[in-house]
Image (tube, rainbow, N blue to C red):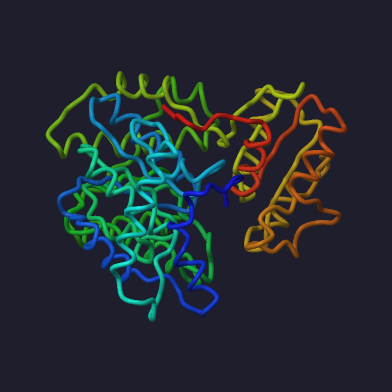
Length: 406
């Protein structure tokens, strides 16, 4: 969920708001109908798709930055946003203006008005942004659409595209019971975007051999190459913590493979270092000097990510005076709490309209209350970790600009 809602958000959320109370679910068939109504031709749009459990946004943004530095015009679709939904669709790294956003919303509303009544399902918000990002790319004459999945591969509207290259960030037991009941089901759903048009599947280091085997098998079935992420560039290693840097390299590597499939060859190291110098990733272990304190802000949501975030904070900034942490049910709350054991932690509930927090240690505070408490203590160094919804509130509180990422 974003920190702020805009008047132009209405058309993108209209069907979900109307369909969910009726017990309807999101419908990919309805998204296909809308794509046809909008005049979208998935086969005519060169696409690089990014899937995975974590790090997708970093990899997708990195891929777009690399392609821009190589001379292509790029439209980027990511999900979820932080401060506003303008961030979901970008051209040349810049978020949509409100005027552009409102116009796309009007086009979307008109397209929906020509569809039959919702009987079997609704158009999901992520589907609306995915399709309108494609519409924006088509209108702008973009050379490539870089699309991050919202949740899943086969089950997500990103599966409507036919990607030339697919990048796979780490896949683990995220969204159990939604994408599948076990890791095998989850990875099968994620890899459903790999199709007969896909020439290369680029993967970072996976945590589980099962995932690596599934990637190899899926690629073999469609005749695609499996490409390991390139060796770490110095500029990337210097700017980001290892987990984020690895996802950036996956994005750069996917972009490089895409260029090759389009018949373009570039100096990978030179373009990668240029892209790294331009790339900004707020909320991915970003550091902000605000309100008299140093804030380390990271959307880490599992014990591995939280441990990496804490280690990097200690190495680069020091021992945190206070940790603000938000982990809802469905995450490994006990595992994350164990990583933070012994530190002064304020437990946060943010996004209570759609998330539950029955596993969170007590006491816990709502997001804004936690921030007010933190400022009252006047800490020198704060570490903020947890969900995108929580990190969105922190970045908004700090007034961090998200208009341009590269």
